[in-house]
Length: 322
Image 1 (cartoon, rainbow, N blue to C red):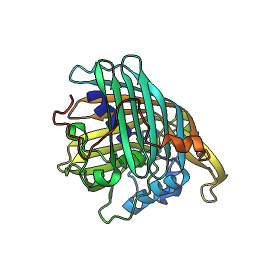
Image 2: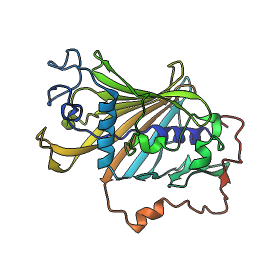
Image 3: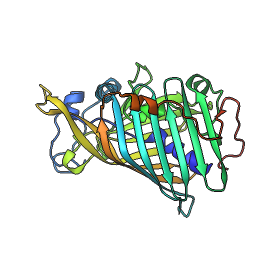
């Protein structure tokens, strides 16, 4: 069950965000467009003010450009505990499509198989490891959002975090969004309060590179997704280590640059209380493919051998991590 919990955390937090000129997207000032690391000469001054509406608008513009995403190669390696003991690695494929379609199937010779999927009505997890009876659970989105369906270990998780972290969610108007600058790190931070389905009060943050990401060095524009408790203590984090930038056609008339989207190729995740660390590597990406019958079939809850699915609205996992 620990590896299942780890996979859920990874999927919930894995970031995929678009990249374009921050000057153009936010309309707040000029930045160098070459080798921008946040510490280069010419990028050391105080950042101009930014508003929450500007940052939310940036995310929504990127989400509008990213309708489907498929990775032919998705691999997971993880460590846990004070000594960071390693789990066997898993590999497979990942596919997502707006608004709520998602499927990741990863396998390993020693670690078995994890199948995690979602469609507009429900999500499911199938978990199989050697010497342990397979586990297959599901829940409707409505039950989960109402707190009627519980995940193992009482993880502060929302099924929609998956699509949000993939950069495929449109953020609604919210008067509680706030924005701040971090001049030393050269980042903008968007944050807002939320309540997890388990009733826990949390705060979500998205950390942006204030300077234009350098596509030649595979730099991400959105650097981190963070989840904190009500007191600001970090619960979980996902840092994009590298990303690729893909032109999608057309030239922006203001910036004179190609319109692009960006997807991650390496993400580092950490879940603080459980001391989980994970590296997720994503390769051979296909973006905005036509929605074929084969792709639609991925988002249908599967029948798995002789293992009947259990509704999380009725099932209980009272011993976290086991």
